[in-house]
Length: 438
Image (cartoon, rainbow, N blue to C red; front, side, top):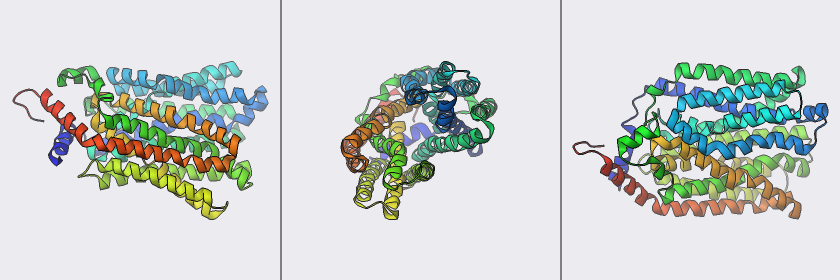
């Protein structure tokens, strides 16, 4: 079986011939744009009170301004990622960044609610496929053995960008006005969009970044079939989505929990919640690094670690909710936050290992879709329903059961991982022209 893993590794690592310094430049610029993505998305939340007062808006209208971005992302992530895989990822990323930056500028210039809603819709269209296509670009310039680390580190930029967008947006709006907050976020994104194509060149990227059509012709296969060709990949989509149910619930409801049970003001509850969210971002990176270091010679261990992260999350949250409000409970919640997003790196690595490189952007768009439809979308809503029926503290006692369900899904995927790897190697070997070796 180790022979099969070695063959599978050689299939892709042989195509990566990018200097390490250049690879890290690609990562830094792509990571910076992801931070800009989430800063532009979340700055709105910081200025809700100002908009509500100035335009006499209802809470539902404010909620729509925020939710319209997520709606556009959910609807368009997969089709736009498919287009980006075929048209060229670098050009697509630059176009996306320019669109959301100009749309953010439009938010700052909006004269009424309708203008703002249109601008926010455009922000969502611009951001729809960035995370999935961006991580595909990053993977194309690094060795396969670093995938869990890269995926988790890159996606942690979303958490960091969210915190920065809310924190900086609030400060800027307080002293310079809410319009200036949007304008500064737009300038930051547009600056990176201008620099990006000057540094990141399509021709210098590895792993068939010239488009799915050319790669399909080279391999003699339809690369889109690999998106759902194995049970391990499908299990990774579903398991990651279920685990994100916990992450989404905690991010949405921690401020309210601290307000209700710790009697904190909204400012202090928000600050402590931001610290816990940052712990989640740091944990995403640390768990990804740990996955790569422990699984260099045994890739199937990544799924075992994903299972462990799910079970540890369930255990820590369950223990935390048995404790009375206080330092010990907050410590348990912080430890849970460190591992709650830890499955992202291992799940992403499994998906990247078992899907064709030319459709990695689409594969990660499907992962993002699963994370939203199974996790971050229903998580806060279902937790709210449970809170209405039983109280928020009891809701937090019940949601760890979803992590156990995620662990069971990953267990199912692990049972089939060796078989799926063998099928991949056999398929690629069969597609290799006579006289050539992978």
